[in-house]
Image 1 (cartoon, one colour):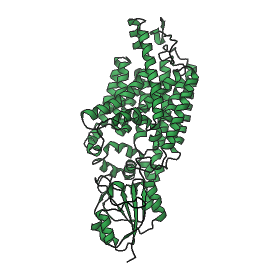
Image 2 (cartoon, rainbow, N blue to C red):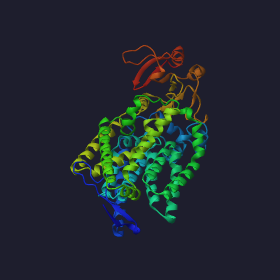
Image 3 (cartoon, rainbow, N blue to C red):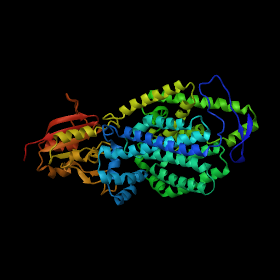
Image 4 (cartoon, rainbow, N blue to C red):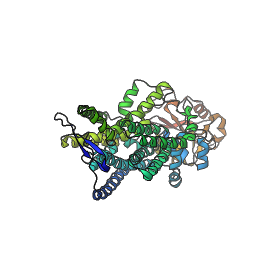
Length: 558
């Protein structure tokens, strides 16, 4: 250990712990030397180039084959909300889904311009993942520079590459929901935090003001992103960033929180719409360890956790060794050390999950694996920290290749036709396009719980049913200021059958019961089915497509 003058005359205690028996080195390196202005310009250009290249690759990776998976119920909600006018969207948010209203408003201009399809619904998420990946390069490089890792550029690139390879990233980039936008915002919110906590004077005020704005916007897009903001505060506190920095963070957070409070209060009054979230159980363990960041890739999860645990253990050993140098030196080193990637990564990783689990345990069920996707950047940072400090370098390269291979396999699986909650509607739409006729009628059957109906397909694939008569529609979703329409029994609309000789009957598996036949398609016993058969319709053909049952009924022309 020795003391040397640092930047601005500050005395910095330098130390280095030498160990021969570990795989990981340089987790706690020396404080950085003053940066030369000439290299700063070169570094600024290279980080922009690196971020742009990886961001572009992320965009392409998210767009390729993104229409193969069928649109599912939640994406149908996006289509229903984003396709209406802004006044209609505001009216809807007063009754339902205020928690997603900001996201709907963001994608509304795009949907208004392009219309609804699987590609147009998911394209914004691909762009948001590209922005998040670019942000990871910037964030990783900034953290590595502050922590004086051996190669800041390498750490930034690996952070972006690992983030892009994460299964949850592949999923979010093809999901027409707010997850990708929320992840991108949390990444850039963290970049702004790094700049703010290192700035002084007027620049610091500007950066903290921007942080407050992003706190408001990020929380408006996804309310539980506030847990990432709290993770920022915990990192500052544990990292000993000083009273002034912590107070600035608190002020910016409070201002941003107050700005978004009206929307948060409105959303809190609509909690009944998530009453279906399950209680914590033994399955929650698998959700936390695997599903929330690694989807269903056990191999990726195992390798990622091994790397993260090695990083934590190696860092803990070095921290204990440093303390043996002397209590005073350790205290000074703790106070003066730069913003550490490990501390940020662990707080960002743990606090959102812990917060949602605690809320689910003490109040009402709140935890879902996808609600913690905003911690995926923390996972990438911790893995990147392990890969950039592991020795020998060949082992790090092998680990990165393995992660890319496992991530690539999951990327392909995310493009299965019915991968999204077994939704079959793209295949149902294909049948209707091939076999349906203009002037046909269609009966959308509501599931037994009455929560939703198979009419979801009309907002997901409207072209497939264009020109068909909706037999049971009562009031449209727009007229009801809701996401979904209301229906009436077919027996109240028998007059619509007067000039119809072909009727399509579409039901979810849960909405039909009856005997099984050779094609394994059950004969419905619903009141609507009885009304159709009583008016002379007989089954001509039937399809079982995933969870959907589709029937074509005909009768002689009147």
